[in-house]
Image (cartoon, rainbow, N blue to C red; front, side):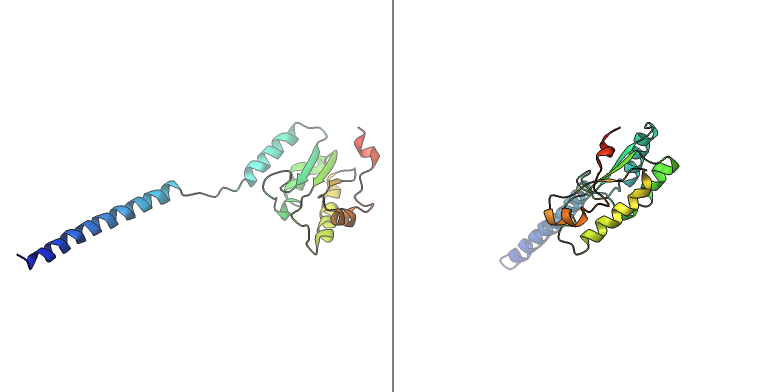
Length: 156
């Protein structure tokens, strides 16, 4: 009997271990299903909302921006594709750019902002209005006469 006791205990502990391990794996799989996140690109929702807002406006004022205007930065190709497609030949009364601090410190910040301004110029007959970051060096770099808002823009 003394020789069989260790074997009996080993079998009991092994069965307990297998049962515990199996239950742990089952629970782990279940937690994975519950906490699983699915990615949803909100580009289609954004496009629908913009279209709905522009449909009611005779001369819309369009504000394009990055994380200042929305929590997520917009993709660069949006400037050429979506804005042109949404506005169509009607154009906008005014295009306002609100750009944040995402590019501050970048070596190409001046060129990037200048390209962005040039891209939105055809969307409106008025020059674009730019509200830039609170970085004096960046504001000075993009604050030339090409994007400085004129007083006549503010009047209806």
